[in-house]
Structure formats: C-alpha cells, structure tokens
Image 1 (cartoon, helix red, strand yellow):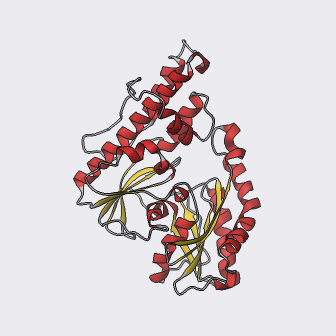
Image 2 (cartoon, helix red, strand yellow):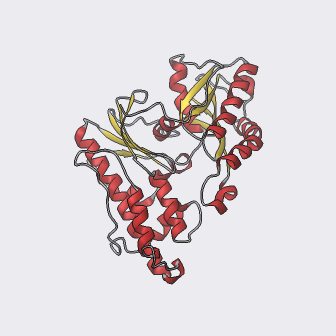
Image 3 (tube, helix red, strand yellow):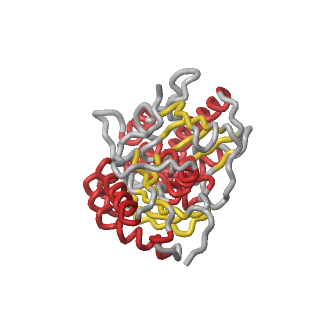
Length: 345
C-alpha cells in the first residue's frame, strides 16, 4: 500500500473516445495512468462516432478504474478525492465518467472535484516534472477537438483569448489523412510522412484572419489540400494517381502551413501580453514539427511528456490537486457539460 502525506486523487476521463483513470499524489507524481483506446472502433469511420464511444465507455470504465487502483498499489479507501473531467466533450461520453465519479464519491464518502478537460491539458506540463512554467504564460491547446489560445496569470487563473472559428487543427490532420488515404488518426502518420517530404512543394494558404486576431481557421487549408489532391469539382482524380513521394510532399506542405499558423499566432499572443513562457498541451503537442518550430521562441516553451499529450486522466487528477488545496469541491448533482468554462466575451 502506498504511503502518502499529500492528497492522493483518482482522476477519471471520458470526454471523447478514451476511457482513462489515473492516481496522482501531490499534484504531479503519477502512480498509475491507464487508458483504454477506442481507435480501432472508430478507424473505419475516419472519426469518432459518439454512440459507439458511449457504449465503449460503459464497458471500459470499471475495469480501467480497477486497473488504475491496482497499478498504483493503493486502495479506494486510501483515496483523498475523486476527480472527473466533466466538460467539455461529447455528452454521452461525459455522462459515463461523471456518473462513475459521483457514484464513487458517494459510496466512499470522498470529496468530488470537477475538472475542465481543456484546463487539464494546460496543467499536463507539470506531471512528473513538478516544474511550473514562469507566469504569466500563453497557453495553446491543440487537439482533434480544440485549437485555442489562453492567457494564464497562474495555473488556476486562465482566460481564453482566441479559438478556432471552424475546424480544430487535429481535426484538419484527420481529414487530410483521409484525403490522402492514410487512415485514422491522421496526426501521427502525417507527422512521420512530413519528415520525408518537401514542405515547400505545395504553397498551401495560411489563414491569419485579422492583423491582431488570435483566432484560427483551418477549413480553407483542408479544402486546399482536397482540391490539390483530387482536383476541382468536375475534374476528380483518385489519390492513387500520386506517387508516395508526392503524398509525402503534400503531407509536409500541409504540416508546414498548419505549424506556421500556430507558431505565428503564438508570437502574436506573446506580443500582446507580458507572458514569460508558453505552455502547449493536447494531442497535437506531440507533433515533431510543432516542437521544432517553437524551439527558438524568445521565451521558454513547455510541452507535456509524451504520455500526457493525448487525452488522459492523470492531467485531471493533477489539476484537481489545486482544487483540493482550496477545498473547492463539487456537489453530487454535478452536470456533464459539452462546452468549456472558458468562453470568449
């Protein structure tokens, strides 16, 4: 059994298509981090099917929690609190995790802590390292469902300053991978192919919106790739007409355009704030191109360790540590909410 002096928190994650549970102590020491992936279930649809995701969560949630407790060498009785990502996400998926968390909190008479999934992605850089980036900071969350910029005064005081007007960058990666016949999910395979392609082969557009805008738009870039590969309406051609090298060039050019926009928007955010660092979280934070592009920034840039880039429960349990210290607990009528608590005003 684990001995601990600081809060020992079980985190639960079910916002989209990953069923996850983790045990974290002291806000950064990850004792277990269990994730049941649904990639194989959704691959043939080239994206997440909400009803399939919900049913898989029902099947996976209890075995994943049991495994997280076992791997942490602890017991339910030893837990100090139950944390759950209750927003934002797919409503059917969220309900499974929230119901499990509320049931455990009630049965064990433990405090319940509500976590915003996007906020947890920003916190994920602290996991295992216990290094808090210099504040204030600019935060960027990039994933299949989110592309947004934040201004952080500290790890709990966060303000949304820009978001996507249409597609998230991770979604654009998935759609472009589908166009190129590369399968699902698209991020990892496009990142690998981009390393072998010419990023200047195709001059894809960079949508910067206004001169000072911190918002994003990736639908035009996605459409530009579609037209380049398959031709304009009336001149359809199959992707098989492209050689492997041409496909790699398209992947590299698409990635270059995507990363260029993200990098330039981060520079804008830095110029509009007094930020001392940049925090990047979410599935696309694992992207090699993004990490290379931000290596020469004028302030330090913090990424999560690879295990905590994609959706996981450790980041929710870690962030919940701060709420536990403030005694900021949720009631048992906690709702699942599809949108983030960070909204543009």
